[in-house]
Length: 144
Image 1 (cartoon, rainbow, N blue to C red):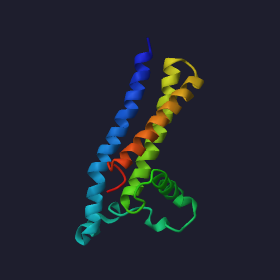
Image 2 (image 1 turned 180 degrees about the vertical axis):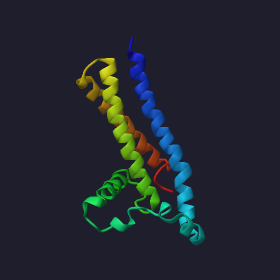
Image 3 (image 1 turned 120 degrees about the vertical axis):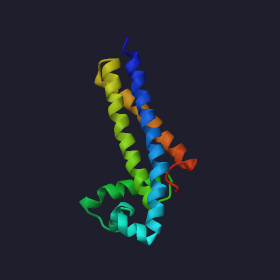
């Protein structure tokens, strides 16, 4: 009887990924274009710049997210320069976390156990990683 809620958790994860793709396709080119014009760049400040440029060769706790995002870009074989890598890493991390917790909720609702939730989390993680890898290969993400 609760299977529909398990299916809805999978649908929510896929919808989340598609929203991330839409945000990436709409916003990252705007940030890239604003960053190339000097008058607009000064008006928008650090919004248009890659927040990880100050962490390029620094190993500190503040730069840990930037290191993770750079690793994600290299793992997905995406363009590792510019603001697109930062947002690809950020969106992948958010989707990764969302897949874990959606799977745990789906297992708890559908089968009433945490073990089933781990199973659903692994399935959603596989779907998320595969989807991101395919989207990067198609040029829909990370190669602006």
